[in-house]
Image 1 (cartoon, rainbow, N blue to C red):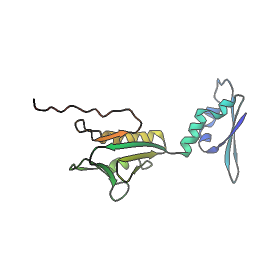
Image 2: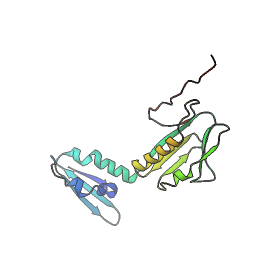
Image 3: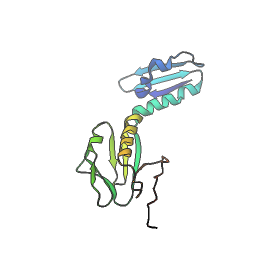
Image 4: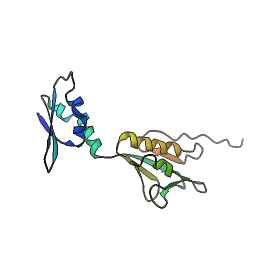
Length: 171
């Protein structure tokens, strides 16, 4: 059985993946380049091998960017560009100093950080999971939630609750 894939990404797996030793159902790989298209054909005696997760991930990594959503929570917490990329400014509440995070964005120029209009959602987009994850983790640690007020940042879909500490009141 044969499957047809666009060559970008699938061809990057190379002979180390397709012609590796010890395969139960050997995989074959042919690349066809014409003026109009660049196509790979992946074949195997087992149809599941031609649509494997590794091939799908290689294709998706080459053609799609990886994105991570960071949500800013709390009254007065806002992110915005002044005037444009890479000058990202973040305010962690009403009356607090504005943090300039352009040095973080310039570390990896391939990653982009998009901010929605209200300024409470940052979308970190990068070519690989490692680059997008590294940028999101850096922003997450710089804008960590305050333990008393709960104002700060968290990663969308990640179960990291904001740990609030009980304030000491008068007895």
